[in-house]
Image 1: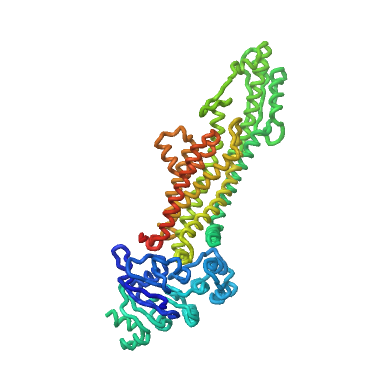
Image 2 (image 1 turned 90 degrees about the vertical axis):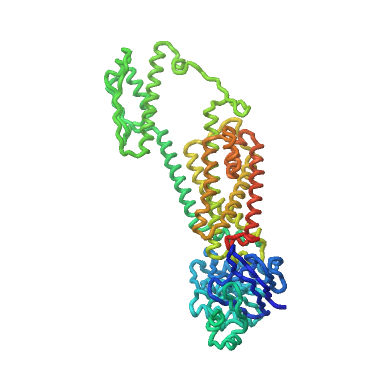
Length: 233
Length: 390
């Protein structure tokens, strides 16, 4: 069974056609990246698959559950990290993890503390955390729930090299242990390093899809950034 | 368990020094003002320090001085010097008006000074009345007939009920009941309503709402958690305000009692139910409004209509009884769910149970509609995109 199957997915915001009938699939245990510049519809696709917003057309299934019909079942097996998300500022890091653990069965808080790697600061209020610390806490929150599918919107956006590298390492490690990842990013070099397969998105449609190495070979490019530029030319 | 976690989250986020400190500060201000007013009233009841200089030892002057001394202290830090001239008694004997000289010794211009001045004037008024009684009784006339030749035997009919009291006393009694309750309810609605709307704004701004919407819980749980959390925080804040306000109002000596007008256990239960549904209606309405907040800043503006809805009935009900309103005004006041707990104590004192029960039923229906609308909004795109797509 495929982890994610998307067929002809469409979403409009009034007259604006944000997603224009895209299709793709993600295998179990795969890290799949949707990449493209800002405003091409990446976040919209992730929000639909995370059951936050409704689709206007097409079909999408997550581990066999249909988006729009089985949303409550889907929420039990996914975990979503919004772009530039924060956490509840008045809570302490540990309280936040415990709060989220109330909603998922079998949460491993000790493991989450290890992933967050905040040391004694896990007992401090979140409002005192840096951006990188909050992001690590949120990634820990996502993985703590042991989701079948982790949906991460720009997981390293705004982070410094050290924090970004740490988060990429965590994602790779979890994928190796069977978690499926669906990631969006406008950082094409990062996705090239991180993802098993990628979909290049532009103007609400997927313009190319494949393994990073295959795409580079197909377009005779040195990196995915170059591939993207050649594809949209 | 899941709802409990959501409620804990709401209370943890909302019960911050930023929300509690202003309430404590206001409580202390009210309590301080009450203490000052109470102190002034106490001072006005105390014997003022006065120096009495008498140049006349005749009967009327001696009598007048003895009354003044009964109601004033002669000591240090006098507020006034009262001088009784040598011709005081002789002028009265001749049937002429006597004169006394009062020299006020003001230490400052603060309002607290006026309490002692009032006490001196009261002592002089008593001395004058006693002197009148003495003069009249010397002429073999009953002084009490001169002062009060007619006695009243008055009854007041209110809502088909005969009460052996003057109407002013009844109005004063009901005013004392209806002054504090509308203020406290207004504060509670405005504070907890503002909290719900701000919470929505903060959740959107921090994108914690997106995380919340992907948790495996029913959307109605999220709505319920927010409403209960805000109710708890709102109740704590209102309690703090009420403590200060109660002390402030009691300092005026307004907690009068009137025979035949009492609230029993059922009445208090009805007031509590009315307050609960009114608060529920207000908070669920705020949750609907808060759904339109884009961020914390816009949430502040959105809380204004709810504040206005709470302030309107407060002002009107503080000065006007529901039954004496015009029909359109009655309809407006009844349609605002916050009016009902404000009106409930006065209505129950007059045994008008039906209006209280109708108010509870109306508030409950209003709450259910708002909660259903809020739950529906939580199931649409509106929360995230600002557009409705069910």
